[in-house]
Structure formats: C-alpha cells, structure tokens
Length: 149
Ligand code: DQA
Image (cartoon, rainbow, N blue to C red):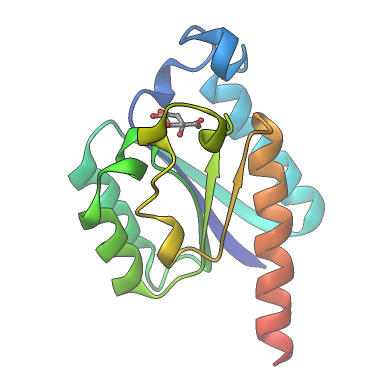
C-alpha cells in the first residue's frame, strides 16, 4: 500500500475558526480524518502533520524520503515566500501535490505566486476540503502509473 503524508503549514491549525468566510468551518482534525478515511477507501496509507514553522516543514519533507511515497502539501503562506521549501521538495524527489482550500489565483496578487508549483506534480486549489481528496486521488493515479512503467 502506498504511503502519503498530508503536510499542513502555518495557521492551518486554526481551521474552523480562522476566517470561515474564506476557509470554511471544517477543522484541521476533521480534514485529517477525512483524508485518512478517503485514503483507506482508495488504498492509501495516509498520515498527517501540521506545523507553523518553516524549518519543521522542511524537516518533515526530508523525513518523508524513504518513508513516504508522496506528499500532499498545503504550505499556507510559505507557498508564496519559501525558496527553502521549494528546495526541500526538489531535494527529496518525492511527488508532491500542492493544495489550497481557497482559490489563490482569485485572491490578492501576492497569493498568485507559488514557489511550490514549479517543483510539484500539480496544484489543486479552491475546493476547500475536497482539494485534499482530489489530491489523494491524483497522487494515487500517479503512483500506480509509476509502478506500471
Ligand atoms: C492557503 C492560501 C494561502 O494563501 C494562505 O496563506 C493560507 C491558506 C489555502 O489553503 O487556501 O494560509 O494555503
């Protein structure tokens, strides 16, 4: 069974109460439980981690090498600033799907830039919790095709 890490970045621990008009009322716990149960349904072993710290996110990406088959990453605001996260993803060579709850392209201009996108398998944004569910489906399809190649 393929293993996938759901990695959430800064401020996502506050989901449910943080700007619900933008991010909805789903809590991080609900989001993580949905990912684990969707993973079990489609045949993925899903684990999850959240940190507000850039270095801890980089450590989690490094630790995933050899232990996980892919990562679903919502880097929060670090998406728009972090060359270090981009380098970490490029360094481990794991397939990473970038996700966002909100449609970053329909928001402020500073959110349109992603340092993650150039090193990601793909980007899914704007579907709330379903961005993660779609990311898991996409990652599974990718991992199965890789295995078939
Ligand atoms: C976010 C979008 C980012 O611009 C923002 O900084 C976040 C959340 C999202 O999931 O929509 O923290 O990544």
